[in-house]
Length: 128
Image (cartoon, rainbow, N blue to C red):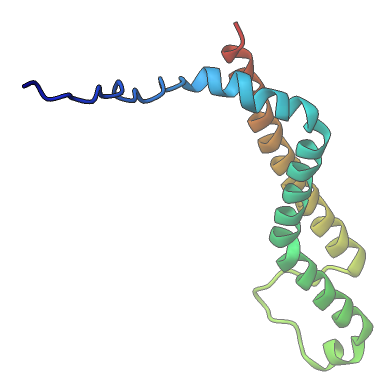
């Protein structure tokens, strides 16, 4: 007598992995295009926050300069050191700090633009 054997179901084949450009094209690109403004605003906000963090020491120096300017009697009692250059007035200090902060902001903007250009070039290379 022959035994009846159950037929086995064919083995489950794993799905074919999708290559990265296909993932980007099918999933990420539509998301990026739908939310482009939000992404740009997010990047801009992050850049502003990082810039403000880097400008914090400059702002502290500016506040100190203002305090020194408001209390001239303290400066009069202390003789200036011989080797140091003469003290700058408030406007000169403010101008130098503004120039330094403007240069740092421009530098950050250039870095962001470079990153955005690289990102756009990368997305451009993916499209057929």
